[in-house]
Length: 393
Image (cartoon, rainbow, N blue to C red; front, side):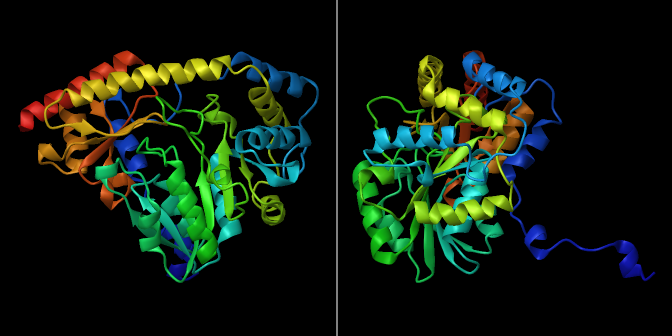
């Protein structure tokens, strides 16, 4: 056996060049410390509502443990179609819905439906870090749409138009946005839809935070802003709204002819989603919404607490935070880079946050804080940031 054989096979170039997760690196760094106040995790701290759990248990006891159709059980596809028919004012049927294993598979399959290797995908900067990895897995090229703080990091049609290339086949749109909490206004969505038609690209619209919205701001889907718009695939999820992150249930909504192709691909990716999880999702969508409203009310009060606390710190500011459960705070007055600030905050004050640079070059000088946690943790985290800012003043 040669030396090369003894070393074993090498991983593919696709695997070895997959973008590293800065967020994962932060988590691993935090694990080395005790008693850390963490404002890092974008996960509800609530339990899944009892009636949803009961529906899953009943389904399991009824023997729902076998394969399901690739696109999902009819009851769930119908429930999703009813929801968005009412919400968007469109006539949607089950053929307009594919059930996925969480929003992540939804994004993967939507992008795989929209683009080929060598195509360009527009993606906002800052944006959810995993978009870069998913575009990489497509063999496509990520093209940044730089956002700016002066309008609260809200993407505009002018910014999208400026980033277009002859190879643009898709735009990833995220509203309400992670890490920004920003919500794209309807007038911008109308203009972005016009660009999609003119330049023949698909808008892959990540709306997993659509139910977590505050104040007088209204979430509008691009599918709703332009009723006859067909250049879209909307990715939804029950993870954030119903505290179901571990259940792994989401969906894609879009034109039936596109989703027919998506369904064929799902067969080779996850085959299908578990029946009992889908029955739980039906209970979530069709059942009482009291728990959802209570969770959103709690997030709103936590948002107010963290924004007020950060805004009271000299040299720190944050804008927007009208949706999701994140704030994107400006710490440039510290004179530290995002990574330096996060490291100092962890070592000196045992507070963990995510550097803004994890979400793109435009995030440098900012930090992301999640307020999907209790008020005592938020208060302690803000106190740590205040102490660090005072020490570098």
